[in-house]
Image (cartoon, rainbow, N blue to C red):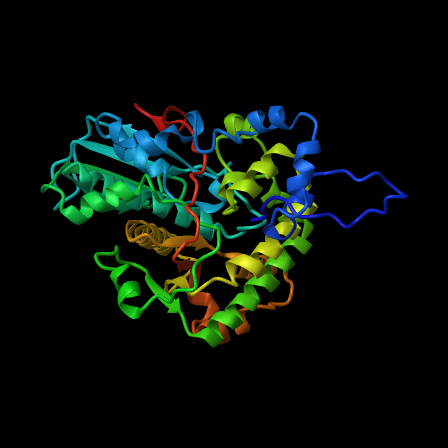
Length: 422
Protein backbone atom coordinates (compact mmCIF):
# COMPACT_ATOMS: atom_id res chain seq x y z
CA UNK A 1 0.00 0.00 0.00
CA UNK A 2 1.12 3.61 -0.28
CA UNK A 3 3.95 4.52 2.02
CA UNK A 4 4.78 7.91 3.57
CA UNK A 5 6.55 10.92 2.20
CA UNK A 6 8.16 12.09 -0.98
CA UNK A 7 9.00 15.58 -2.30
CA UNK A 8 6.31 17.58 -4.05
CA UNK A 9 7.26 19.42 -7.23
CA UNK A 10 9.44 22.45 -6.56
CA UNK A 11 7.84 25.86 -6.07
CA UNK A 12 9.45 29.02 -7.30
CA UNK A 13 10.69 31.28 -4.45
CA UNK A 14 9.10 34.21 -6.20
CA UNK A 15 5.73 32.50 -6.24
CA UNK A 16 5.64 31.01 -2.76
CA UNK A 17 7.92 30.91 0.29
CA UNK A 18 9.80 27.66 0.80
CA UNK A 19 8.03 25.36 3.25
CA UNK A 20 9.93 22.50 4.84
CA UNK A 21 7.99 19.25 5.16
CA UNK A 22 8.56 15.54 5.52
CA UNK A 23 8.43 15.36 1.76
CA UNK A 24 11.48 17.54 1.27
CA UNK A 25 13.39 15.64 3.93
CA UNK A 26 12.65 12.20 2.52
CA UNK A 27 13.76 12.99 -1.03
CA UNK A 28 15.35 9.88 -2.41
CA UNK A 29 15.20 8.18 1.00
CA UNK A 30 18.12 10.38 2.04
CA UNK A 31 18.64 13.21 4.45
CA UNK A 32 20.12 15.80 2.10
CA UNK A 33 19.60 19.43 3.04
CA UNK A 34 16.85 18.42 5.45
CA UNK A 35 19.53 17.84 8.06
CA UNK A 36 20.23 21.56 8.04
CA UNK A 37 16.58 22.55 7.77
CA UNK A 38 15.76 20.48 10.82
CA UNK A 39 17.31 23.05 13.13
CA UNK A 40 15.04 25.76 11.69
CA UNK A 41 11.73 24.00 12.23
CA UNK A 42 9.79 25.67 15.01
CA UNK A 43 8.36 23.29 17.51
CA UNK A 44 10.33 20.32 16.19
CA UNK A 45 10.88 18.91 19.66
CA UNK A 46 7.20 19.10 20.49
CA UNK A 47 6.14 17.44 17.26
CA UNK A 48 8.84 14.84 17.66
CA UNK A 49 7.57 13.87 21.09
CA UNK A 50 3.96 13.84 19.91
CA UNK A 51 4.78 11.65 16.92
CA UNK A 52 6.83 9.14 18.87
CA UNK A 53 10.37 9.93 17.70
CA UNK A 54 11.69 8.62 21.00
CA UNK A 55 8.98 6.00 21.57
CA UNK A 56 9.32 3.77 18.52
CA UNK A 57 7.67 0.42 19.17
CA UNK A 58 6.78 1.37 22.74
CA UNK A 59 3.54 1.78 24.64
CA UNK A 60 0.18 0.03 24.64
CA UNK A 61 -0.16 -0.49 20.85
CA UNK A 62 3.03 -2.55 20.89
CA UNK A 63 2.81 -4.29 24.26
CA UNK A 64 1.51 -7.62 22.95
CA UNK A 65 4.69 -8.27 20.95
CA UNK A 66 6.69 -8.76 24.13
CA UNK A 67 3.95 -9.98 26.48
CA UNK A 68 1.89 -12.52 24.56
CA UNK A 69 3.65 -15.50 26.13
CA UNK A 70 2.83 -14.13 29.59
CA UNK A 71 -0.93 -14.23 28.93
CA UNK A 72 -2.42 -17.00 31.08
CA UNK A 73 -4.15 -20.06 29.68
CA UNK A 74 -5.40 -20.57 26.13
CA UNK A 75 -5.82 -16.82 25.71
CA UNK A 76 -2.08 -16.76 24.99
CA UNK A 77 -2.82 -18.74 21.83
CA UNK A 78 -5.26 -16.04 20.76
CA UNK A 79 -2.67 -13.35 21.57
CA UNK A 80 -0.26 -15.06 19.19
CA UNK A 81 -2.94 -14.99 16.50
CA UNK A 82 -3.31 -11.23 16.90
CA UNK A 83 0.39 -10.84 16.01
CA UNK A 84 0.09 -12.62 12.67
CA UNK A 85 0.83 -11.02 9.32
CA UNK A 86 -2.22 -9.59 7.54
CA UNK A 87 -2.84 -7.20 4.63
CA UNK A 88 -2.37 -3.49 5.38
CA UNK A 89 -2.38 -4.45 9.07
CA UNK A 90 -6.18 -4.50 8.93
CA UNK A 91 -6.32 -7.17 11.67
CA UNK A 92 -9.55 -8.47 10.10
CA UNK A 93 -10.58 -10.79 12.89
CA UNK A 94 -12.23 -11.52 16.19
CA UNK A 95 -11.73 -14.62 18.33
CA UNK A 96 -14.14 -16.56 20.52
CA UNK A 97 -12.54 -18.66 23.25
CA UNK A 98 -14.44 -21.39 25.08
CA UNK A 99 -12.22 -22.92 27.75
CA UNK A 100 -14.84 -25.41 28.87
CA UNK A 101 -15.40 -27.05 25.50
CA UNK A 102 -14.93 -30.75 24.97
CA UNK A 103 -13.91 -31.90 21.51
CA UNK A 104 -16.36 -34.20 19.76
CA UNK A 105 -14.58 -34.49 16.40
CA UNK A 106 -13.81 -38.18 15.67
CA UNK A 107 -10.13 -38.95 15.89
CA UNK A 108 -9.20 -35.71 17.63
CA UNK A 109 -7.71 -35.50 21.10
CA UNK A 110 -9.99 -34.71 23.99
CA UNK A 111 -10.16 -30.92 24.06
CA UNK A 112 -9.53 -28.44 26.80
CA UNK A 113 -10.67 -25.40 24.79
CA UNK A 114 -11.88 -24.25 21.40
CA UNK A 115 -11.01 -21.02 19.58
CA UNK A 116 -13.20 -19.73 16.76
CA UNK A 117 -11.52 -17.32 14.35
CA UNK A 118 -14.14 -15.05 12.80
CA UNK A 119 -13.66 -12.79 9.79
CA UNK A 120 -14.55 -9.15 10.46
CA UNK A 121 -16.03 -7.86 7.17
CA UNK A 122 -15.83 -4.26 8.39
CA UNK A 123 -12.03 -4.50 8.25
CA UNK A 124 -11.56 -4.86 4.53
CA UNK A 125 -10.12 -3.11 1.49
CA UNK A 126 -12.68 -4.01 -1.19
CA UNK A 127 -11.01 -1.85 -3.83
CA UNK A 128 -7.43 -3.06 -3.31
CA UNK A 129 -8.48 -6.63 -2.44
CA UNK A 130 -11.76 -7.00 -4.35
CA UNK A 131 -12.04 -10.78 -4.11
CA UNK A 132 -10.89 -10.93 -0.48
CA UNK A 133 -7.97 -13.26 -1.14
CA UNK A 134 -5.50 -11.28 0.97
CA UNK A 135 -7.87 -10.84 3.90
CA UNK A 136 -8.66 -14.57 4.05
CA UNK A 137 -4.96 -15.40 3.72
CA UNK A 138 -4.37 -13.10 6.71
CA UNK A 139 -6.81 -15.26 8.69
CA UNK A 140 -4.69 -18.25 7.68
CA UNK A 141 -1.61 -16.48 9.04
CA UNK A 142 -3.41 -16.10 12.38
CA UNK A 143 -4.29 -19.81 12.37
CA UNK A 144 -0.65 -20.76 11.88
CA UNK A 145 0.54 -18.49 14.69
CA UNK A 146 -2.04 -20.03 17.01
CA UNK A 147 -1.06 -23.59 16.09
CA UNK A 148 2.60 -22.81 16.79
CA UNK A 149 1.77 -21.04 20.05
CA UNK A 150 -0.32 -24.01 21.17
CA UNK A 151 2.48 -26.45 20.43
CA UNK A 152 4.94 -24.33 22.41
CA UNK A 153 2.64 -24.87 25.40
CA UNK A 154 2.47 -28.61 24.91
CA UNK A 155 -0.99 -28.55 23.39
CA UNK A 156 -2.22 -30.27 20.26
CA UNK A 157 -4.26 -28.09 17.92
CA UNK A 158 -6.80 -29.59 15.54
CA UNK A 159 -7.85 -27.13 12.83
CA UNK A 160 -11.26 -27.25 11.15
CA UNK A 161 -11.87 -24.85 8.27
CA UNK A 162 -15.31 -23.21 8.08
CA UNK A 163 -16.86 -25.64 10.56
CA UNK A 164 -20.36 -26.63 9.55
CA UNK A 165 -19.77 -25.34 6.03
CA UNK A 166 -21.23 -21.93 6.80
CA UNK A 167 -19.42 -19.18 4.83
CA UNK A 168 -20.78 -16.62 7.29
CA UNK A 169 -19.60 -18.60 10.32
CA UNK A 170 -16.12 -18.94 11.80
CA UNK A 171 -13.38 -19.17 9.20
CA UNK A 172 -11.53 -21.68 11.36
CA UNK A 173 -11.97 -23.51 14.64
CA UNK A 174 -9.01 -24.68 16.71
CA UNK A 175 -9.58 -27.42 19.22
CA UNK A 176 -6.86 -27.54 21.82
CA UNK A 177 -6.04 -30.72 23.68
CA UNK A 178 -3.17 -32.44 25.45
CA UNK A 179 -0.14 -32.96 23.28
CA UNK A 180 3.50 -34.02 23.51
CA UNK A 181 6.17 -31.76 24.87
CA UNK A 182 7.21 -29.15 22.27
CA UNK A 183 10.33 -29.80 20.24
CA UNK A 184 13.26 -27.40 20.10
CA UNK A 185 12.13 -26.25 16.66
CA UNK A 186 8.57 -25.63 17.86
CA UNK A 187 9.88 -23.49 20.70
CA UNK A 188 12.12 -21.63 18.27
CA UNK A 189 9.21 -20.82 15.96
CA UNK A 190 7.08 -19.66 18.89
CA UNK A 191 9.87 -17.34 19.98
CA UNK A 192 10.01 -15.93 16.43
CA UNK A 193 6.40 -14.74 16.75
CA UNK A 194 7.59 -11.77 18.80
CA UNK A 195 10.33 -10.89 16.30
CA UNK A 196 8.41 -11.41 13.04
CA UNK A 197 7.92 -8.06 11.32
CA UNK A 198 7.64 -7.08 7.67
CA UNK A 199 11.01 -5.67 6.58
CA UNK A 200 10.55 -2.96 3.91
CA UNK A 201 14.12 -1.74 4.03
CA UNK A 202 17.00 -2.57 1.67
CA UNK A 203 18.43 -6.07 1.52
CA UNK A 204 22.11 -6.94 1.18
CA UNK A 205 23.52 -8.16 -2.12
CA UNK A 206 23.88 -11.75 -0.90
CA UNK A 207 22.21 -14.56 -2.86
CA UNK A 208 20.08 -17.22 -1.19
CA UNK A 209 21.07 -20.74 -2.18
CA UNK A 210 18.65 -23.56 -2.88
CA UNK A 211 19.39 -25.24 0.44
CA UNK A 212 18.46 -22.13 2.41
CA UNK A 213 15.21 -21.76 0.51
CA UNK A 214 14.34 -25.44 0.89
CA UNK A 215 14.89 -25.26 4.65
CA UNK A 216 12.15 -22.65 4.95
CA UNK A 217 9.44 -25.14 4.05
CA UNK A 218 10.49 -28.04 6.29
CA UNK A 219 7.45 -29.16 8.33
CA UNK A 220 5.32 -26.53 6.58
CA UNK A 221 1.52 -26.92 6.62
CA UNK A 222 -0.03 -28.55 3.57
CA UNK A 223 -2.49 -27.17 1.04
CA UNK A 224 -0.20 -24.67 -0.70
CA UNK A 225 3.34 -24.52 -2.08
CA UNK A 226 5.98 -21.86 -2.65
CA UNK A 227 7.44 -21.05 -6.06
CA UNK A 228 10.84 -19.29 -5.97
CA UNK A 229 12.14 -16.73 -8.45
CA UNK A 230 15.91 -16.30 -8.16
CA UNK A 231 17.38 -16.19 -11.69
CA UNK A 232 18.66 -12.65 -12.46
CA UNK A 233 16.71 -12.23 -15.72
CA UNK A 234 13.46 -13.24 -14.02
CA UNK A 235 14.24 -11.04 -11.00
CA UNK A 236 14.69 -8.07 -13.32
CA UNK A 237 11.55 -8.77 -15.32
CA UNK A 238 9.43 -9.30 -12.22
CA UNK A 239 10.91 -6.22 -10.54
CA UNK A 240 9.94 -4.08 -13.52
CA UNK A 241 6.39 -5.45 -13.32
CA UNK A 242 6.19 -4.59 -9.61
CA UNK A 243 7.16 -1.00 -10.35
CA UNK A 244 4.62 -0.76 -13.16
CA UNK A 245 1.86 -2.30 -11.05
CA UNK A 246 2.63 0.05 -8.16
CA UNK A 247 2.37 3.02 -10.49
CA UNK A 248 -0.93 1.67 -11.85
CA UNK A 249 -2.29 1.41 -8.30
CA UNK A 250 -1.39 4.98 -7.34
CA UNK A 251 -2.81 6.23 -10.65
CA UNK A 252 -6.12 4.56 -9.72
CA UNK A 253 -7.55 7.13 -7.31
CA UNK A 254 -10.03 4.81 -5.52
CA UNK A 255 -7.22 2.33 -4.80
CA UNK A 256 -4.91 5.12 -3.64
CA UNK A 257 -7.52 6.67 -1.37
CA UNK A 258 -8.51 3.36 0.19
CA UNK A 259 -4.94 2.27 0.86
CA UNK A 260 -3.89 5.62 2.29
CA UNK A 261 -6.85 5.55 4.68
CA UNK A 262 -5.02 2.78 6.56
CA UNK A 263 -1.83 4.79 7.01
CA UNK A 264 -1.39 6.12 10.56
CA UNK A 265 0.53 9.34 10.13
CA UNK A 266 1.38 10.17 13.74
CA UNK A 267 1.39 8.75 17.24
CA UNK A 268 -2.10 10.02 18.07
CA UNK A 269 -3.52 8.02 15.15
CA UNK A 270 -1.56 4.94 16.22
CA UNK A 271 -2.89 5.18 19.77
CA UNK A 272 -6.44 5.73 18.53
CA UNK A 273 -6.59 2.93 15.95
CA UNK A 274 -3.77 0.48 16.81
CA UNK A 275 -3.77 -0.87 13.27
CA UNK A 276 -2.63 0.13 9.78
CA UNK A 277 0.85 1.03 8.55
CA UNK A 278 3.16 3.55 10.18
CA UNK A 279 6.32 5.53 9.52
CA UNK A 280 8.24 3.17 11.79
CA UNK A 281 7.54 0.26 9.46
CA UNK A 282 8.88 1.78 6.24
CA UNK A 283 12.47 0.55 6.57
CA UNK A 284 13.95 4.06 6.81
CA UNK A 285 17.30 4.77 8.44
CA UNK A 286 17.12 6.24 11.95
CA UNK A 287 17.92 9.84 11.02
CA UNK A 288 15.43 9.99 8.15
CA UNK A 289 12.76 8.37 10.29
CA UNK A 290 13.28 10.89 13.09
CA UNK A 291 12.95 13.84 10.72
CA UNK A 292 9.91 12.29 9.04
CA UNK A 293 8.20 12.31 12.43
CA UNK A 294 9.36 15.77 13.46
CA UNK A 295 8.38 17.57 10.26
CA UNK A 296 4.79 18.12 9.04
CA UNK A 297 2.91 15.18 7.60
CA UNK A 298 2.77 14.42 3.88
CA UNK A 299 -0.17 14.22 1.52
CA UNK A 300 -1.61 11.11 -0.09
CA UNK A 301 -0.11 12.08 -3.44
CA UNK A 302 3.33 12.47 -1.89
CA UNK A 303 2.96 9.15 -0.13
CA UNK A 304 2.07 7.50 -3.42
CA UNK A 305 5.22 8.89 -5.04
CA UNK A 306 7.30 7.64 -2.16
CA UNK A 307 5.85 4.15 -2.60
CA UNK A 308 6.64 4.06 -6.32
CA UNK A 309 10.17 5.37 -5.71
CA UNK A 310 10.79 2.87 -2.92
CA UNK A 311 9.49 0.00 -5.03
CA UNK A 312 11.86 0.97 -7.83
CA UNK A 313 14.94 2.11 -5.88
CA UNK A 314 14.86 -0.10 -2.76
CA UNK A 315 12.46 -3.03 -2.85
CA UNK A 316 13.04 -4.41 -6.34
CA UNK A 317 16.56 -3.00 -6.64
CA UNK A 318 17.78 -5.05 -3.67
CA UNK A 319 15.64 -8.18 -4.11
CA UNK A 320 17.63 -11.40 -4.44
CA UNK A 321 14.63 -13.75 -4.32
CA UNK A 322 10.88 -13.53 -4.75
CA UNK A 323 8.52 -16.14 -3.37
CA UNK A 324 5.04 -16.85 -4.69
CA UNK A 325 2.53 -18.83 -2.65
CA UNK A 326 0.95 -21.18 -5.16
CA UNK A 327 -2.43 -22.92 -4.98
CA UNK A 328 -4.47 -24.77 -7.58
CA UNK A 329 -7.53 -22.55 -7.17
CA UNK A 330 -7.09 -18.98 -5.92
CA UNK A 331 -10.86 -18.59 -5.49
CA UNK A 332 -11.13 -21.47 -2.99
CA UNK A 333 -11.46 -20.08 0.58
CA UNK A 334 -9.80 -23.18 2.06
CA UNK A 335 -6.85 -22.75 -0.32
CA UNK A 336 -6.54 -19.12 0.72
CA UNK A 337 -6.39 -20.11 4.39
CA UNK A 338 -3.78 -22.75 3.58
CA UNK A 339 -1.75 -20.18 1.65
CA UNK A 340 -1.80 -17.85 4.65
CA UNK A 341 -0.66 -20.61 6.95
CA UNK A 342 2.26 -21.40 4.66
CA UNK A 343 3.21 -17.73 4.34
CA UNK A 344 3.26 -17.27 8.12
CA UNK A 345 5.33 -20.42 8.54
CA UNK A 346 7.85 -19.14 5.98
CA UNK A 347 8.04 -15.77 7.69
CA UNK A 348 8.62 -17.27 11.12
CA UNK A 349 11.32 -19.64 9.86
CA UNK A 350 12.94 -16.78 7.95
CA UNK A 351 12.86 -14.61 11.07
CA UNK A 352 14.51 -17.32 13.13
CA UNK A 353 17.21 -17.58 10.44
CA UNK A 354 17.88 -13.83 10.43
CA UNK A 355 16.24 -13.22 7.04
CA UNK A 356 13.90 -10.41 6.10
CA UNK A 357 10.56 -10.86 4.33
CA UNK A 358 8.48 -8.16 2.65
CA UNK A 359 4.97 -8.86 1.34
CA UNK A 360 4.59 -7.52 -2.22
CA UNK A 361 1.19 -8.13 -3.81
CA UNK A 362 0.89 -5.16 -6.16
CA UNK A 363 0.76 -7.25 -9.33
CA UNK A 364 -1.97 -9.64 -8.20
CA UNK A 365 -3.90 -6.72 -6.67
CA UNK A 366 -3.79 -4.96 -10.02
CA UNK A 367 -4.89 -8.10 -11.88
CA UNK A 368 -7.84 -8.49 -9.49
CA UNK A 369 -8.75 -4.83 -9.81
CA UNK A 370 -8.71 -4.94 -13.62
CA UNK A 371 -10.85 -8.08 -13.58
CA UNK A 372 -13.38 -6.44 -11.26
CA UNK A 373 -13.67 -3.26 -13.32
CA UNK A 374 -13.63 -5.02 -16.69
CA UNK A 375 -10.42 -3.29 -17.70
CA UNK A 376 -7.91 -5.02 -20.02
CA UNK A 377 -5.64 -7.51 -18.25
CA UNK A 378 -2.24 -5.84 -18.48
CA UNK A 379 -0.24 -8.11 -16.21
CA UNK A 380 -1.23 -11.81 -16.22
CA UNK A 381 0.68 -12.86 -19.34
CA UNK A 382 3.81 -10.93 -18.38
CA UNK A 383 3.60 -12.26 -14.81
CA UNK A 384 3.62 -15.80 -16.24
CA UNK A 385 6.58 -14.99 -18.48
CA UNK A 386 8.56 -13.46 -15.60
CA UNK A 387 7.80 -16.10 -12.97
CA UNK A 388 7.18 -19.28 -14.96
CA UNK A 389 3.91 -19.61 -13.03
CA UNK A 390 0.37 -18.95 -14.34
CA UNK A 391 -1.17 -15.88 -12.74
CA UNK A 392 -4.24 -17.96 -11.86
CA UNK A 393 -2.11 -20.02 -9.44
CA UNK A 394 -0.26 -17.18 -7.71
CA UNK A 395 -2.12 -16.13 -4.57
CA UNK A 396 0.46 -14.13 -2.58
CA UNK A 397 4.00 -12.94 -3.21
CA UNK A 398 6.95 -11.51 -1.30
CA UNK A 399 10.66 -10.76 -1.47
CA UNK A 400 13.20 -12.40 0.78
CA UNK A 401 16.77 -11.55 1.69
CA UNK A 402 19.37 -10.49 4.23
CA UNK A 403 18.05 -7.21 5.67
CA UNK A 404 20.30 -4.21 6.13
CA UNK A 405 18.10 -2.77 8.90
CA UNK A 406 16.06 -4.29 11.69
CA UNK A 407 12.32 -4.19 11.08
CA UNK A 408 10.09 -2.39 13.56
CA UNK A 409 6.84 -3.77 15.03
CA UNK A 410 3.41 -2.69 13.84
CA UNK A 411 0.68 -1.56 16.27
CA UNK A 412 -1.84 -4.17 17.38
CA UNK A 413 -5.25 -3.94 18.96
CA UNK A 414 -5.61 -4.93 22.58
CA UNK A 415 -6.47 -8.55 23.29
CA UNK A 416 -9.67 -7.56 25.06
CA UNK A 417 -10.82 -5.73 21.94
CA UNK A 418 -10.75 -8.83 19.73
CA UNK A 419 -11.38 -11.67 22.18
CA UNK A 420 -14.86 -12.88 23.10
CA UNK A 421 -15.38 -15.30 25.98
CA UNK A 422 -18.85 -16.90 26.27
